[in-house]
Image 1 (tube, rainbow over the protein chains, first blue to last red):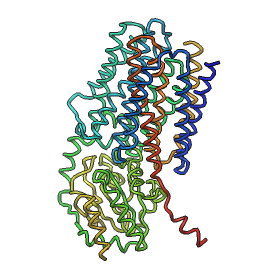
Image 2 (image 1 turned 90 degrees about the vertical axis):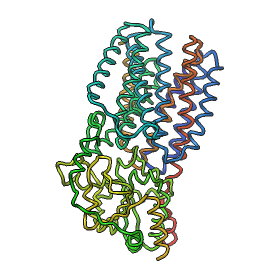
Image 3 (image 1 turned 60 degrees about the horizontal axis):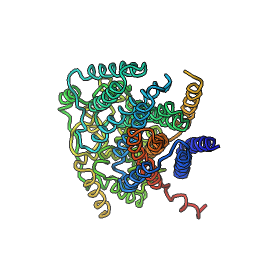
Image 4 (image 1 turned 45 degrees about the vertical axis):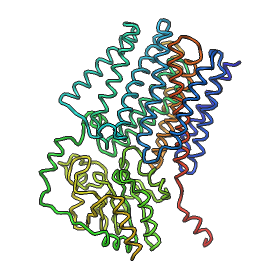
Length: 460
Length: 103
C-alpha cells in the first residue's frame, strides 16, 4: 500500500513536470507552470520520504537544511547578469548529486547488480563526472575566474580523443565486472579530467552551445540513475532534461552555422583567424559620429531597431537602453529589439537582461521575425554586437562565419554602432558593416555612450 | 536485459518524445527560463539521494548520500526561486491597456 502511494506520487510529479515545461511555450502561462512543477517536486519528495527503506532521517534533515540555506540566496540574490554562470554552477550541483548516488549504489551493491544496472551506473558516473567538471570549468570561464579565451595546445584534439577512448574501454571493463572499486574510481577520475579537458579549449562565445550540451548530459546522467535504482520519475525528468539540452544545443549550433564537432573541437577564434583579419581591410576607414549627432538622428527617427549583443551585457547597459528607448517613444518613434539566437553567453541571454530592465517582451523580436523588416528601420542601433551582424556571413564565401544566419542590419536606412574600439569580434574577423557608407561608429563604453545619448536627447 | 529494464527503456523513450515535442514549442524568448526550470527539475535526483542518505546501508552511502541531498536541494530550492523571479520580469507593454478606453 505504501509502495503504491510512492509510485503514485512519482506519476503525479512526472505529469506536473511535463505540464510545467509545456507552460513555458507562452510567457503568460510560464510562471504558473513553474509553480506546478515545484508542487510536483514536493509531492515526489514527500512520496520518497515515507518509503519503508528509509530508516534514518538525521542525515537527510542535515542535507535538506544545508541545501536550503545555500539554495535560497542562490535563488534570491544572484543578479540576472550572472545567469549564465548561475546555470553552469547549477549543472555542477545537479550532476554531482547523480554521480554521488551512483558511487554509493556501486559501493553497496556492485556484487548483486544485474547487467542492466551495471551499465546504467557506469553511464551515470561517467556522464555525471564529465558534467561536474565541464560545467565547473564553464562556470569559471563565465565568472572570469579562468580566462574565457580558448586554451589550446598542440595535439589537443588527439589527446582528448585518446582520453575518451580510454574512458570507453574502462567503462566496458566496469560493466563486465573487472577491476572492482579501484577501476571504478579510476573511471570517475578520468571522466573528471575529460570534462576539464573538453571545455577548456572552448571560447566564451561558444558557451551557449556548451552549457546547453552539459545540460543534456546532466539530464542523461539522472535518467541513468533512474535505470540504476529503478525509479521512473528520475527516468522521465532525465529524459526531459536530456532532450531539452540537446534541442537547445542544436538550435544554438544552427544559429552559428556550425556542427557540434566544430564547436567542441574547433577552438574557434584562435590565432589563424586573427592573423587573417590583421591582413585584410587595412585601407578601410570607419566613420565616427559624436554623441550629439547620434542623438539627433535617434530623436527624429520614427522606426528604431536596437540590436543588443554580449557587449551590452558586459557593460550592464540594459537599463540605459530602456531609458533611451522611452525617450524615443515619447517623441513618437517606435523602438523594437532584434535578438540573435546566440547573442550573449547562453540561450535567451539578451531577452532576460532586457526583461530585467522592464522592457516589455512583446517588443523583443527573434531574428526570423524581424529580418525581413530591418530595411524599414530608420536607425539600427547596434550595442556591443559584432559577428551576428557581419554581412560577410551572407556575402563572403571565404569568411569563417559564411553561412551563419545573421541580423540584416546592413539593410537598415542608417546604422549606429556602439563599440569600444575597432577590435574584431569573437570570430576574429573584420566586420564590413562598420565601413558601410550608412554606418556611423559611436566609440566608447556602451553604458557611458548611452548615458550621453540620453542626456543629449533630453536637451533637444 | 530483463523485462524491468525494457519497461524502463519504454518510459525513457516516450518521455524523450514528449520532451522533444513540448520543448520544441518554447520560444527563444524563454530559453533561459527553460534552462533554469530544467535545472530545478533535475533536482529530482534528490529522490535517489534521500534513499542513499537514509537507508542505513553503509557509512560510504550515508555520507555520499547526504552530500548528494545537499547538492540536489540547492538546485531544487534555488532553481525554482530564480526561475519564478526571472519569469516575473517578463511583462507585456501596457499599450493594450492604454488603448482599451479608445476601443
